[in-house]
Length: 114
Image (cartoon, rainbow, N blue to C red; front, top):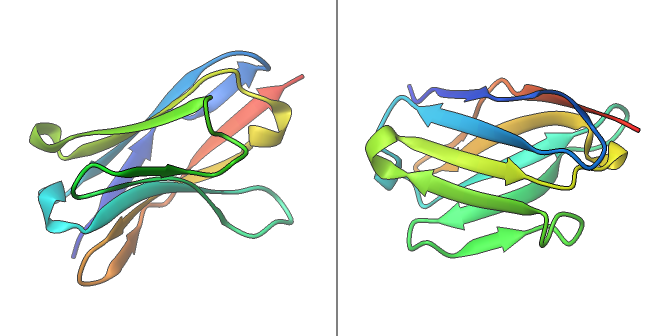
């Protein structure tokens, strides 16, 4: 069973930065894509950013130019660098891996104060 463990969430002021990390229990080259999703209270879970096995990245329009997804295969990790954070970025952020199955972490909470 693949496990994904997120870390790096916390409280930050608007305009600040956070870096989220996701460590997989298996080599990430096993996955077709990995990504970050978020869910704010009362809202549906939404895509934030993905990175495919070939390195292609995709971002939600709302985070384009502010967030950067990256990976380190040796560390079995995917990262999300979040800059210029806004109050509307506050949510639980989930790591996702798509392979033979669709895997999710338990999430890490990001709170942005105005």
